[in-house]
Length: 449
Image 1: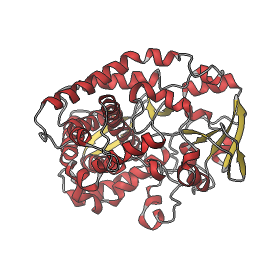
Image 2 (image 1 turned 180 degrees about the horizontal axis):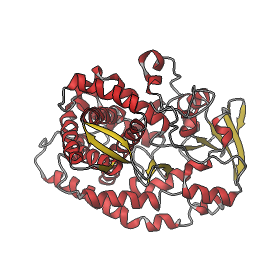
Image 3 (image 1 turned 45 degrees about the vertical axis):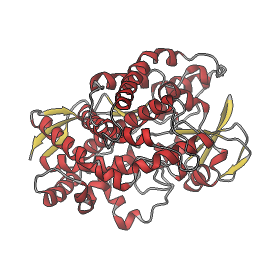
């Protein structure tokens, strides 16, 4: 491990920003609105149009995400960013609407079903290796997006007949850059009904994505039932076990849209950041490679191999600690409550800065260092469940977490045994719009082993 390597972080402002400064900073990079105190204290409060609290305390997070969940629905600002693309689907819904969708979808992601989808993950890892063999210098974000998009198309739709990966990928990025950016109008107090420019600019990309998803759904409806064992087949048959309710056509499009985007983009980012970290930490890279090579002997990984390769999982977990897929969430308090000894009033905004929680001086030793050993079994058991939240926690924990981790472990193990990765220019910087992306990318030298 390079003794002088400190993984790149986000700029930290050590003075209070004005409302306009906050709005401009949030549009550039949401991570920059997290104040320096949020990395050192359990809770930080302030006021800007409304009172806000930034909560980075495991006990307080447990109250918001589990014990008093109903009091902290998603904030309208975050809903508005997501609504054009995913409507009131599982990720964006609250209350009874969320509960029935969650009950309907959960059986799709049982461990048995996820393992059945693993051959597609192994196949795409092999294809990624073949692409890297012809490159001396690669941009890993685009490579990993290609790999994980292949997987999600196979597991969600049994192929990509109705999807142009490049067009769909550009639409996702365009959406993040428009509707996915914080709006100045939110910080300036404009009413919710006032149109946001980002929503208007995102319209074309939304139509592009929805048209592809809707075409795939309609084509499946015309086929004989039971013709494919994939996510779409499960979703078409999904029903609330208590009421028997099925998803409407619009709900199907929105939920499939969400799973396709979230099911490949966040995994690709976790892998890209992991390769960046391992490229700068050759000692850890050698250890992970030795473990994978010893067990796999050059072949691609499958689900039955993963338990024998704990370092692969530890490297990914540490990657998602330093670069969580979603770095900041927001909730709105419904009723009066208390968090970390501080009174929260109705309509207060409660920010959950996962980025700061994962780099917090109170909860982690050497929080800015890359050290996969934190997640070795003997150390993992000492962590507070609400100290490490790459997939959220409580009833709203990511329903596809097992799927994402299996996919990432198979791809990382397969690639790391066959290639050595070393840094190349330019280096990345973490920028959050909706997800924490490395800009302008992760550029690495790639050498076959």
